[in-house]
Image (cartoon, rainbow, N blue to C red; front, side):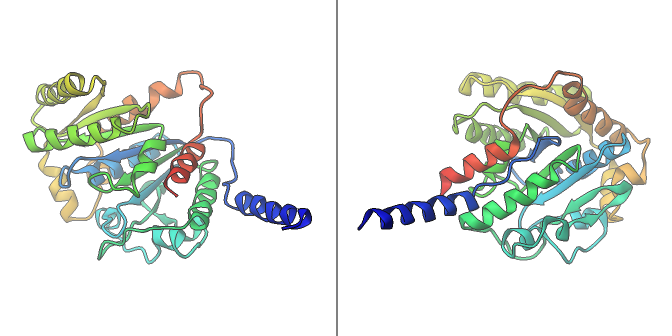
Length: 296
């Protein structure tokens, strides 16, 4: 190969790499990944109502349902979105194309329902999605990711890249052990993470604190890591009634015990950080890009 041919080959390679590098925008939105070790602990319901609690405070919130193919944010709101996150991920539609309007001005992107549609995307599609997401981070104060139960290969980069991780569990022993398994999996990635725990369906505050202490002690003993307590959400019959009526409990009964507890959860998760000086660290998009690049 002649030197001009070598130069041309190198130029094409560099152009290809540049096309696949996401555009970096100034970070504005705080990102939170909400996870659980197992299904059925109320994770999506907590995520939705937490987003509404932030909207109530006058914040601009984007909720992205990343339980691909199995999402239920639509069901909890009582709507049916014709556009989902799959449109952006696989069809390369603008992210704004998939935005739906929820209560109280909330904007959300449905994960879709039906058969599980886990995705294996090439680098170009991931790059397109990250560029779309990066633009959205300048338009919102908070972006909440409702992750699927468990920790899939596709979901892990979003969880690791988020500013904070909220682990939702319940006082049931199986739920506690599944939450521990999720923490263990995250710790084994070797990344420095901010992990907080919310205990759903607690009989009272004492029950929630006891549940957290069991999980926290196990994490410290066997993983030598720390998780922080975010709060408890009471076991309230109102929640089931709201789900049946397909109405978020923050809307159905704003002054109920469970609604007040979610407001307190929002304060713990976000208010403290807002009052602290901003640190120079990698943005969500930079971290997400790095994790996805390692996979390819």
